[in-house]
Amino acid sequence: MPLESISLTEQNDLWLQNQVEYIGDYANKSELVNDLIRRARRAEGINKKPSRIDSCDCNEQSPQEILDEFKLLLLEINTSQVN
Image 1: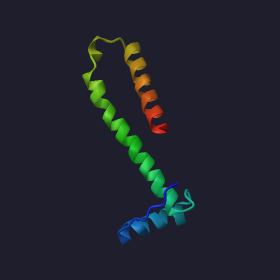
Image 2 (image 1 turned 135 degrees about the vertical axis):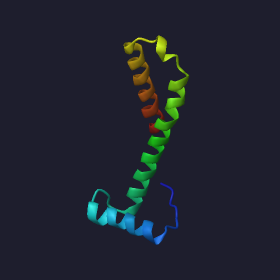
Image 3 (image 1 turned 180 degrees about the horizontal axis):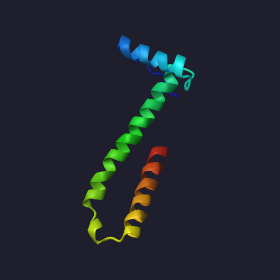
Image 4 (image 1 turned 90 degrees about the horizontal axis):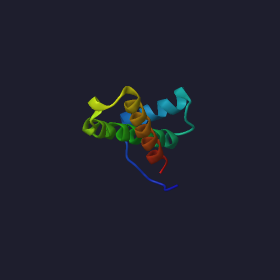
């Protein structure tokens, strides 16, 4: 894994340290930062999908066709996050 050095504001550094020490879901700040980046990338992918949905002609689709298309979009999102 590449090693990076980043500068943080004191407030952000304290927040990261508190998350690691008191919440206990992460062993260190690096794990937390990587998880925050993963979550941001996931949200970015989800936010991009509505433009594709807006461009579809959903008014002419049955509820089942809409559901099938939605499931396909979710599969695409999940597949793109693995890569």
